[in-house]
Length: 110
Image (cartoon, rainbow, N blue to C red; front, side, top):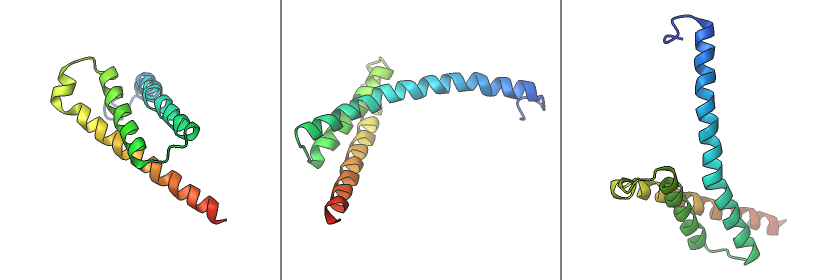
């Protein structure tokens, strides 16, 4: 509201202009993370893989690959940004493994 100086039309225009890049980023993020994660989940179900290491490694690989695809620069690897995304993917993979393990335990206890 401060940037639009009280002009409601200018504020709405600014909101709309910012929504398009946000939608594009959302779609790209889904393609780079959700699709590979769905493939990993399908593989784990198909081959009955229940290892925490499998999900953590797959998450780390998805994280590293996603930032590498987003930023086509060798500096991404030397800056430590890939390690950050790989660590986030590692944690996400472990979280998925933990949640699925808990859901399976609850299902078997019924």
